[in-house]
Amino acid sequence: MTHPSNVFYRSRQPSPTAVRGEGVYLFDAGGRRYLDGSSGALVANVGHGRAEVGEAMARQARELPFVHGSQFTSPVLEEYAARLVRFLGLPDYRFWAVSGGSEANESAIKLARQYHVERGEPGRYRVVTRVPSYHGASLGALAASGMGARRALYAPLMNEAAWPKMPRPDPTLGGEDDAERLRAVLEEAGPETVAAFIAEPVVGASDAALAPNPGYHARVAEICREYGVLFIADEVMSGMGRCGTPLAVRLGGEVTPDIVVLGKGLAAGYAPLAGLAASGEVYDTVMNGSGAFKHGFTYAGHPVSVAAGLSVLHIVEREGLVECARVRGERLLAGLRELQAKHPGVLEARGHGLLLGLVLGDPATGRAFETPGIAARVAAAALRRGLITYPGSGAVDGTRGDHLLLGPPLTVTDGEVIEMLEALDGALGEVG
Ligand code: PMP
Image (cartoon, rainbow, N blue to C red; front, top):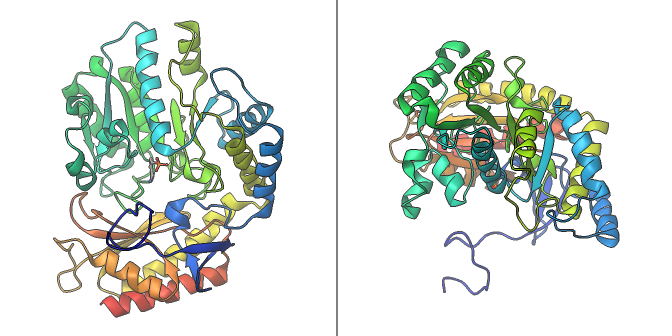
């Protein structure tokens, strides 16, 4: 054993021990304070240590901790689904609750396939996805993902031919022209074989908060409709207000995807909760066809998780956190752009609301490093200064480069934004 413990750690490096959270801060076993500048992978939207969420969960655990979703619904799930779709601006949608983003994307892909079977089009099984992208760790969601490094150790993935690939958004193109590239992918795949197109409206861990230009998603939705393909927006990271709007897919214009996938911010880390919102048309097609979505997980719609989600949604609405994300996000992005001007190793600062990314590279050439590693070094230097960031690789062309994702809780104050920028400035200066 590399170190004495019964915990199966994710890597050879033992993980530091976090013992307490309060607001945007986490505290380790030695009492040291860290500003959680990544919300634990863009999850902790309402901040840490909110007693009212814990109390709502405890009440639910006392009253009705568990029902199996194939046998019962529950008052908390009914109330949550109604409030959630209102918050999202998807009033006639149906919410399906699961425990994590990977499960939610698996559910969305299976629902899209079943939708076409119910319509007498069983040949539509493929799902167009983008490179790079991340849709989850389970074998199906990973096969859907365009993320080379995470795929290589687990080959063969599920039927590679089932996932035709669309290039990443190109910010040098107008949004509509950029989206038009989907048409060529569909034509080449044979649209009669395609069930859905899935994309992250603001790309998360695989592409450092990259977003297409306005008009992209509306045109994507039009093309999908034209070809009879469902449009799935994977808003696991970008949704629930993180990008300064309830749904990031609407940042560049009005659009209504057929299925929206949510996770992370739904219960803000207080409980495992993710899910999908499906349009009335998708839902009715299944219910008027064979009459059931023949899919489920033991913990689908878990009342304690849903109670956490409901409490989090109350907080988000009561405290106006969507607007906070927009306003504080603008300040943080402006500060990151100042850091870009000061540190030649910062090639780009980008993103929306509090889903922001720094693309890092070689200060001598202003280009990406061929070997990743710089982001991890900057993240380690930031951590020494008490700031948690989320480092990753592959931000320049989807295969090369390094990046840091930044996304503090939506409750972050102006003073805490400055604290983040000062720590980052020091870390970037140290790593050079
Ligand atoms: N989709 C996106 C866009 C994500 O960012 C993630 C997680 N990083 C997932 C899906 C998978 O979610 P989970 O880790 O909860 O299974």
